[in-house]
Length: 164
Image 1: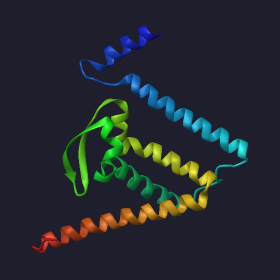
Image 2: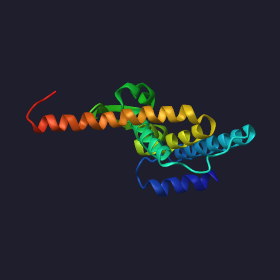
Image 3: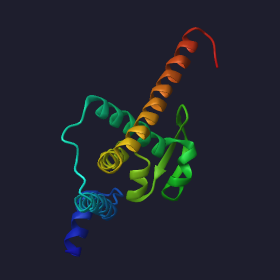
């Protein structure tokens, strides 16, 4: 099995450094976490909602977007990523650009990658603590909308020839 994985890794990488073993670890951690949450829900007699309303879906989407960017790009959360990334500079308003090291670094520096984990956590939150989860969702949605308004305001000011 190990020999087959090494050959697959060599063939797949084609001279590039791709942390396939780390990805297997992350996939295993994700699957294990989902399995444990499912088992805990069954043991606690908790069930997934029969349906998601439009507001729940919007809160989940906006919260997932904001939290994935906050965790992967925000300067203030860089200490969480620092062991797995290297700072390369600023990438946008209030965001940093970092070079990831290994699979964990790629996960932590990628908002698209983190979104799956965050949305799964939000879904679990709706099963175990729906009121608190909706409160977090509404809070992060407000932050996301505020960010978009800040960017729109800055663009309007720039087009009017004024600066902050």
